[in-house]
Length: 74
Image (cartoon, rainbow, N blue to C red; front, side, top):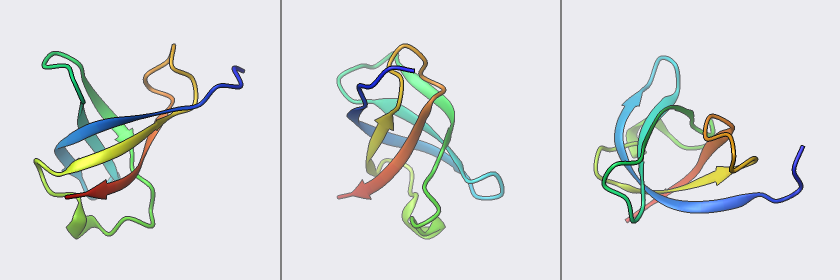
């Protein structure tokens, strides 16, 4: 396991409240969208609005599936 975690800006493009996972467009890229990103359970589902900015924590940047949405903001 790598010891470097990285936080990147993103935009919520979709949210599955049943699975508590999001589709996120990574900031600065029109083509990089990550699907099925887990969302921290302390974020209310009502806050996961399409178009909202978010913070995505990558535990291993070489594996984009090893990430979690840790916050949303306006």
